[in-house]
Structures are given as structure tokens and as C-alpha cells.
Length: 90
Image (cartoon, rainbow, N blue to C red; front, side, top):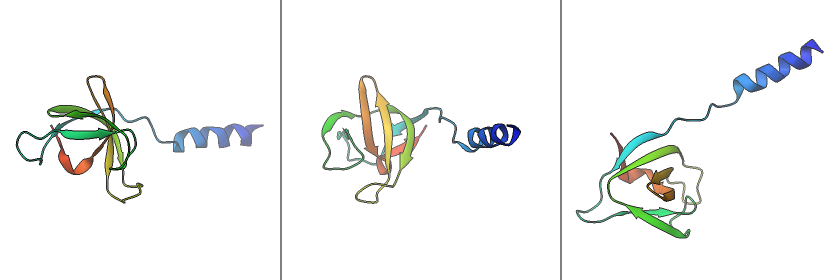
């Protein structure tokens, strides 16, 4: 039984911890434009909203159809995916 317990503990320790959200701001867009937020990390995915200022980022991935980096974001009631290219850490 002890090897099973050690294996279970090793699996728990190897699992990634849930990332704490990080504050970012929208940056790099032309003046007056908002950053589109999509339902999935893809430019052709459903539009769910837009943000202009501060967002919380919950993690990013480049494992996307376009191989570009997208981040899971939340701003107010808007929750979805936005291009990392237009986000800057605060």
C-alpha cells in the first residue's frame, strides 16, 4: 500500500497549481479601439465582448489553431479569450 500512497502524492505534487489571476492592461491597439474577447482562443470564435482598460489574466496558451498566443481574461462580466499581443502587465 505504501508504494500506491507515494505514487499518489507524487502525482499531486507534479500537477500544476491553479494560477492566480494577474492584472494586465490593454495596450498596442490604435487609439480608441477596444480589444475583442472571444469564446475560444481563435479569431473566428464567437465574439463575447470587448475591453478597453484593465483585465485579469488567468493564463495563456499558444496551442491554438493559428499558433498565436491567447490569454483567458475577465473584465467585469466579460469572460473569454483575448490575444496576448495586446495585453501588458500592470
